[in-house]
Image 1: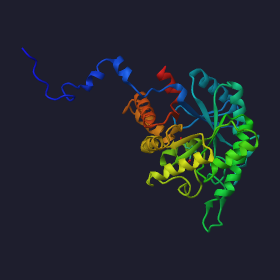
Image 2: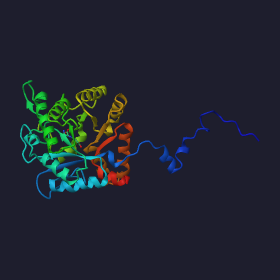
Image 3: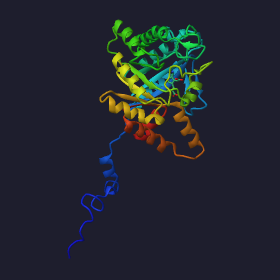
Image 4: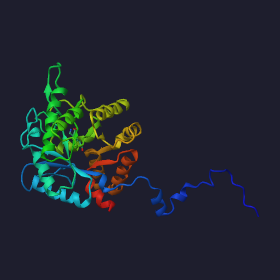
Length: 338
Ligand code: PBG
């Protein structure tokens, strides 16, 4: 007896996509997004002291640590094969110019030296910004010349260059300006090149939004603005997404080597837009503090499964186009993936 004719050529029942899902190995063969520890970057918060491991309440498993404790973290990062660490400093003294951040003896400069000694193969990236170092908590120098209190873009550029150069002189392998000042990438590139550091890459926080997802970080880094907010320099979440592309375009023209989108989870469309418009440009996504804390909080209540959600979220960021993931899950994720 002849087989019954197919209802349609190319469609169901000839085509059954579930055939690609039955066998775990087949799922593996057709899988495109694969996470690996080498793409993960771990943020670390360093402050002065000895034997300090001060828990950050809103970010379970994360601490403000003293430089001596940093050595252990860096060795762990090496053992886990992480792509790198990004350092944030919390100074003893804050002032209007964020002087600790530009001092060769500053907390982050000390931390860089410790990190490079502990395991030189671990990539040390530094966040280049002022909000942790200024008494007003803004990402630059304040002036009121414009008739309103504002961060002075061009006055800040001079200091940003000095800060970045100081990080690199201390041994930083890569610098990551996060202040959203116009011209910040170019200002840093000039200063690094003049000093002979032409080979040191810049990972720019190119499309960084004024986001409430940074809440826990501001506790961790003690960097909340003392007045006003950051909407005068960070991007409006509701802005035309094309504005993010303009930010990326300008940063690339100024010499950015890697561009970042931040936050990540609520901005996957932005990551995808950058990927489509700038093929070949490495994209980093910052899976920020609030994205981490909300999962932690729900997991602690037993409402969701932390591991599955974390890996699913990181995979989504990669699928959207980010090859580099800055995440507070870096160490855990590396273990989960092993
Ligand atoms: C510094 C900076 C911030 C974050 C990274 N670099 C805070 C901010 O802009 O207020 C946020 C990171 C996070 O939330 O995990 N400018």
